[in-house]
Image 1 (cartoon, rainbow, N blue to C red):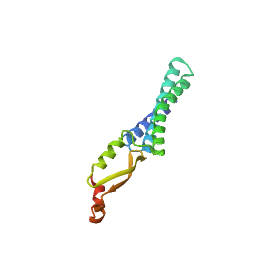
Image 2 (image 1 turned 45 degrees about the horizontal axis):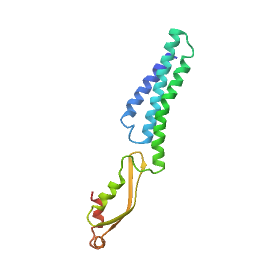
Image 3 (image 1 turned 90 degrees about the horizontal axis):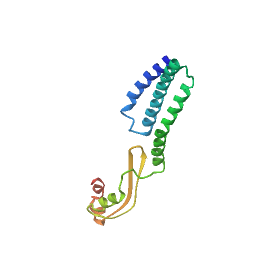
Image 4 (image 1 turned 135 degrees about the vertical axis):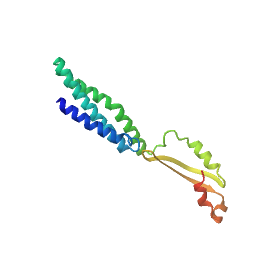
Length: 152
């Protein structure tokens, strides 16, 4: 059992190194990273349980360590679930001040009004903003309406 724990830990360590740089790019990478991290903790638990059993003869060490790993998984799982629900419910990106966005757009030259302003996440880290913006009539006749979209 000890050898399986060591081999599992080595394999999971390689997986963690590979996934570490991309774990914040999207939900899939984050979930994969957390899954491999959980497996690594499981391998550590197997090693710890074998050592405790070898030194003390206490056979319940494996069950106790397994419960501890399960408890440690819960906060990460809830965080990933919360982030996923925010995307599915099309919630506004965290930290985005919609009033400030509205003020910024209204301050652009030739903008008269803005309504139906919405911001949401379509994937982790991919915000989308939509709005109906009313511009001066001259913008439609002189051709610079499209340039307004590119202004910051």
